[in-house]
Amino acid sequence: MNILITGGCGYIGSHCAVVAIKAGWHPIILDDLSNSGEFVIERIHEITGVRPTFIRGDVRDATTLKEVFSSWEIDAVLHFAAHKAVGESVEVPLSYYHNNVGGTLTVLEAMKEYGVKTFVFSSSATVYGEPKEVPIQEHSPRNPTSPYARTKVIIEDILADLTEAEPDWRIARLRYFNPVGAHESGLIGEDPRDTPNNLMPYIAQVAVGQQERLSVFGGDYPTRDGTCLRDYIHVMDLAEGHLAALDHLRGNEGLLTVNLGTGTNSSVLEVIGAFQKASGQDIPYEIVGRRPGDVSAYWADASLAKQLLGWRAKRNLAAMCADTWRWQAANPSGFRKPTEARQHRLGLDSHSQT
Ligand code: NAD
Ligand code: UFG
Image (cartoon, rainbow, N blue to C red; front, top):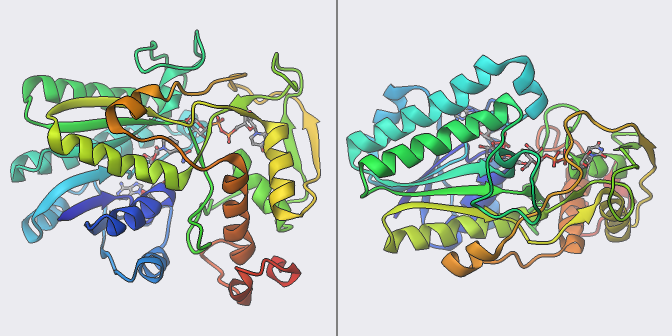
């Protein structure tokens, strides 16, 4: 069983590749490495004993896609390839629409040409915007507030139109909440190119001394400790959710839309506390002003995924922090500058923080 994983060298795609291999799929990874590196393929091999097929290419390139679909009998596509930074999308919207929407269209057109009709799409809780009610259910209104979020909404709509016109497609729109954590081996994890925008990678960089201190954006929200509440989900749970969606699609044509979250929430201060406990490191922080555009609290109603897919997130915040720490301590500079610190990855001693 061959599965095409676009963006499979990235954070979520690489973890999905590991889980897919364990489930018996052979991954064909198509990635232009615009936000990742080929060394990820080595790490996937090291974890699983299987080397995924890797093609360096852009999902917007129809010729490359034709080559892929004509060279392998593809059974399903996991489509991760996209730009994903909310702030950047405000500055360069055309790049976001071109890559995210354009790339998805090219993939779908190639699939149609080659008769491949099983497609899993990385959507996001960001499609909901500021929610009217929490926890958020799948039928809640979508209210995107950034170009990035609008690319996700547009693609969701394209997928709905496609299944309406051609009901034999099997399409999942998976709305991720806040993916964090890393594979328990510490060999793959999130590796932001620049200063991290997101909470967990920033905390992890403070813990290894790459950043001095964390700024907590806002301490005056109407929440239990004044900081924002989010539904952090372990990336391995998320990856397993994709496999559960694929299983579901095997038996069901049409369109599936589900939240992938834990159904619980944590505050920023709770995440800091859990990370300090898991790592044994002090995380200096200061509470500063609110970050524009942040929503005070949202988390998933995760019951539909349980009901339809038989899937639920199993790993708690402590595991998310411990696994992030294992990854960050072993790879203090991410994938790009592997250091001797890697050999300490299971020991997590002070030498690993160079
Ligand atoms: P990532 O940047 O780590 O991975 C995306 C991968 O796609 C990268 O390896 C990049 O090189 C590749 N890519 C980008 N454009 C490409 C193109 N045109 N052709 C080929 N490859 C291309 O991001 P991620 O965190 O793994 O996110 C994966 C997907 O999940 C994205 O669609 C993202 O929007 C979505 N998502 C992510 C989050 C999150 O917080 N990480 C939350 C919700 C949804
Ligand atoms: N935060 C800080 N300091 C930081 C970074 C974040 O206090 O340095 C706070 C934020 O203000 C927020 C919380 O930590 O309260 C979580 O922030 P993240 O940036 O980690 O995550 P968001 O919920 O803002 O956004 C994430 C992804 C989006 C995605 C959205 C919904 O970044 O791409 O989840 O899925 F759209």
